[in-house]
Amino acid sequence: MLATRSIALPARGPVAVACKPRSSLRHVKPLNVAAPEKAEVVIAAMELEERISAHVPESQPSTSQPAVASQLDIEAAERKARRQREQSTYKYAAIAATAGVTGIAVLTTWLRFYWHLRDDGVMPWGELAATLSLVAGGVFAMEMWARWAHKVLWHDFEPGWALHKSHHMPRTGPFEANDIYAIMNAVPAMALCLYGFITPNIVGGLCFGAGLGITLFGIMYMFVHDGLVHRRFPTGPVGDLPYMKRIAVAHQLHHSGKYGGAPWGMFLGVQELDAIPGAREDLERLVENLDAQGGLAALERKPRT
Ligand SMILES: [Zn+2]
Ligand SMILES: [Zn+2]
Ligand SMILES: [Zn+2]
Image (cartoon, rainbow, N blue to C red; front, side, top):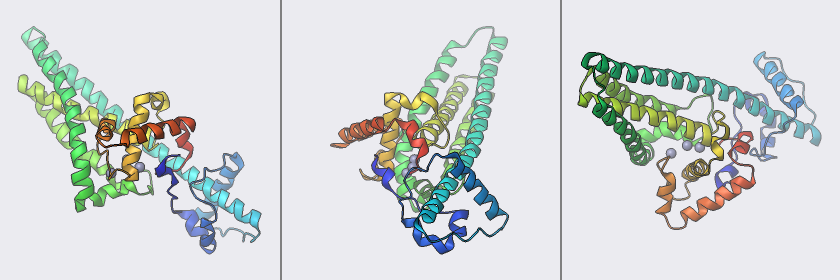
């Protein structure tokens, strides 16, 4: 069990409103207990939600213990159903954004070098090498930027924390205020790509590469952070890769605040923990626990931290 998983999430949304007279009962059962998988409970929850949205008062439940338990089961199943709807909303937004950005990146890269070849008659290999090394450099620079900005601008700086704290609290819809940072990082990336695209020399090639690097980092970050770690969409077998597991658990340690918020970066978070005495051993122990629970995919059925 990860340390961060033990935080009980407060109940929220329509059910919490609908069950006002029973609000004290919400604490009878810890809310981080996995929801029952029974299909009929999910269906019951859907019907309950339909009644709520249609403003039909629900029948008065009896006060006996089994009724209390089933009421809690319905609440848990309703939360699960809502979570799945939010997950699919976010998933389609993420797929559309990734497909759009990747398509534009591939097309502009091809066009840029195609025009060179057409006009000069030779492939500008030097410029291509410069572009590619700036893609790698851009990804690395973004990891270093994230390491710095995540701590100094998003946590320690009050206006930055105003947005980022939405990511450290239970999400209340498909998106969170923190998602604005992803859009903000897209602005310099697009500016660099655009400048590089219309500038047919080595400087243009470098800017174009840097813009692509920031974009690639953004896509990787979204996949690993939002998908793999926070389960906002399914990520398939990628989470079984040993290093991916360590990246995910390292980020869980950021959320737990155990090492004063470290690691602040994402892909080199494991290296950040290496610098803290005992932290790497702790990470390995948590990875072992995760494996014993069936890996990252098993977290899909549990609430987000
Ligand atoms: Zn944070
Ligand atoms: Zn996170
Ligand atoms: Zn989190």
